[in-house]
Length: 75
Image (cartoon, rainbow, N blue to C red; front, side):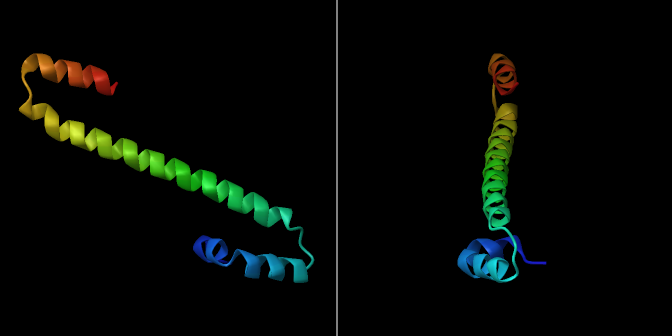
């Protein structure tokens, strides 16, 4: 089994190997498309987690009213 990073970094090599073995190249195109979507979603999740952590660190330093508005904002 090939590593996803290897496939991304060596797309033409993988494409030629699939062609030599008689596989449809659509399989590689589908994989690369889905891998790109997955990576974008992971990136978005990481950004949201970072924001949540920043706000969580900030909340204890705020006044009572500010705390409530930050908590509401994060929901």
